[in-house]
Length: 147
Image (tube, rainbow, N blue to C red; front, side, top):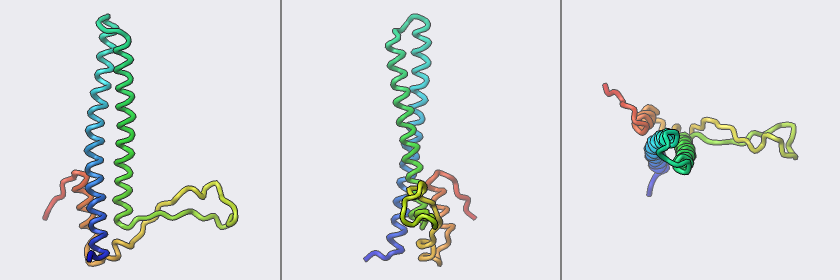
């Protein structure tokens, strides 16, 4: 049987691995977007020089815009995985409640506010939070100095 603390550690570990992978995907997508941008510039120069048709320019523009869209989606997935790390460390969400409008839906009721929860951290009070911070830094590729 897996204890709650072990399950929470696994959840944090999975979130860190997911963040690392989404970071790698974003970096590869940035390189692809940069290559597509250079191809667009080259095809435009070739068109201006009379060595290519305008169809080639439009084709490279389409690939560049597609790469930009994919990069934006990769950035979104990276940020979502960062939120997952936060949530697995004990962060959570709660709905904003307006005191004066109990019966009707306010215009802000669909917005969620972030708050810091301490459920996971307090469950592992003997384990310093620094341990999880080091894991996070390692997942982001930052070197951790050892004493």
